[in-house]
Image (cartoon, rainbow, N blue to C red; front, side):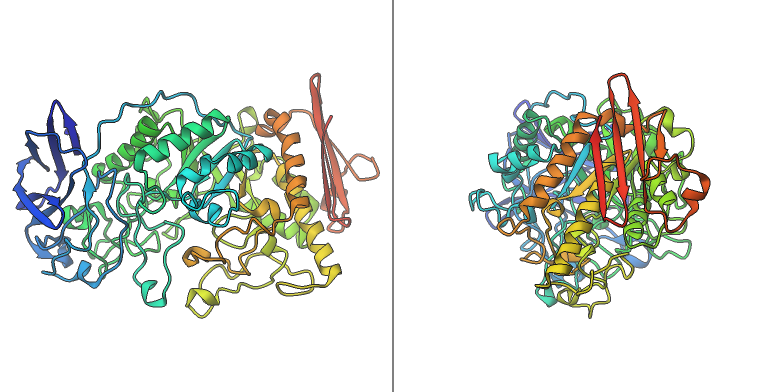
Length: 601
């Protein structure tokens, strides 16, 4: 199989790019503004060229010529400079420009150039620094440290900041087992954002699947590699949130930036020729196409072999198994399992997309973990007093009603969470009954309409001590429920100390004080409470990875629970205890007191 991308070996530099339908392809080398073109040779679906010199650090791109017929999936325009889909380093960030989608308009001046990477020895790939039942900490890299008073200004907002001693100390205080980094590969803003004066602050709109975003990771692959090593040295794993479901080239009005100008067949199309939009972003990558699967697998291998990452979370993961319908036995699963670098990595699915049959919770392979939004919604509804104790107990016990009765014989697959990047923060969940997304420029129409949230008597900020006290109790009860639950748990950065986004439940475009974490005003009492909960859990991690075989359930007065008690909608709570020779755990849920007690016994 031809090695794609740019590689340096034995004093020569070889370039290879896939473009099955192109008539001609050129390698374009840049020295300042000067562009030098070299025509490439076809080798089947791949075009190659070898130059007899070490071009490490040289900026490059491609141009492809052929038919221009977008209605038939032909987007060949030699005026478009195309980013190597296998680029691992770019000289600048992407930016929107009308010329990206205008036929005949040259884009060399506005499109980032890839750099020929220096040869980098692989890292020693070790077993993941993470196991089921541990705490995952979801991090927006830029927002997490932009306001951190102890992180030097030159590091704030970058991957390198995660290795700063103050950040490591915070992660260790919380007993974090792995950080999950929201997208760090190069992305482009959606077209509607620049006219509004906004930018994509989350990164879920990638163009190059392996190239680290120069804004987040200015030190390139070395910066990520060193940060992973620093986290590993503290016993903390690193998971990357990868977006393989679509690219930033968007719908038919989008730009010709990379894959579209080389091989538009990577995007799924309906029988009438229209782009499939199972991602909600205008285009969807077609995982029935072996070239798409190869790109995804190669990207994963790159981050494991070059950086030593411990695993991946897949955004809108059903798309990985579509062809076009979802198939639980899709080829991608076997290909990952058969790969010696990937087979033992932590794999986490966001098990839904917006396509037909898009909700696939519990339908991924048995060794994958899956985000469990039913846990989030049912726990919120319980504390909003709309759900009974029976449903809460089921969620605490690992959601066997979802994952099936067979899972107790292995680690629970559920990733339990109360809040994530998408939606209200935890503090806003108990402070706002309605979304407040006016700053997004869409008249508050974007974002989820139903959040199962409540405001405790005042919408948003208040000085009322009674409202504030109720909110404080609710946060502790919610967090206690999370840390007492069976399965892996996920906490989004800032939720441990009351971070608010001012009621914005779709802050993807808020690269400002709305989205940035405010370290100065954090609730240290709540943070300490979370640290205590996490310590109990960390000492008994195996107990939470798999629901114990023998459990005693009681009412709050100590009487064993009966069916009538479980079905009573007014039940005040319950206690469960699990004991073995080496100890056990006790969980006490007191609904009316807004309290959850988690104890190691």
